[in-house]
Length: 133
Image (cartoon, rainbow, N blue to C red):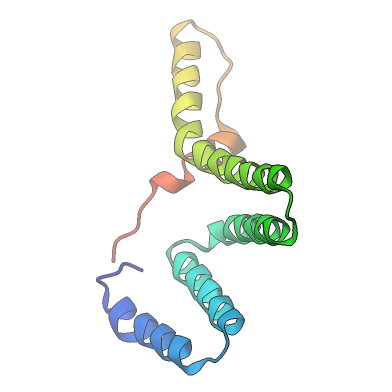
């Protein structure tokens, strides 16, 4: 779903706006917005939904842990852990295909039969696909 598509403009956006303004309480509204964002991204490719749920869960736990302590060192530790987790996910999905493809090409150039295909390469290339329409 693209931001300028008819389904977004005339279905998804109105439902989210009505839901947002119709709900009371900050926690309820934020939970609704979180679920709406999962639906938005799952509409593009539902295979990434578990990844988004995992990232959201890690961030929720880290945020709760940061809010529950007054120790600046523990707060910083939780923040750095959550950032590291999310940046590692981003780095993997953005660059794994490139690096594994480069190693694969180098292996072929040297005549090696060792190829980097399969599971890891497929996941790394997953975010390169886009669907328009």
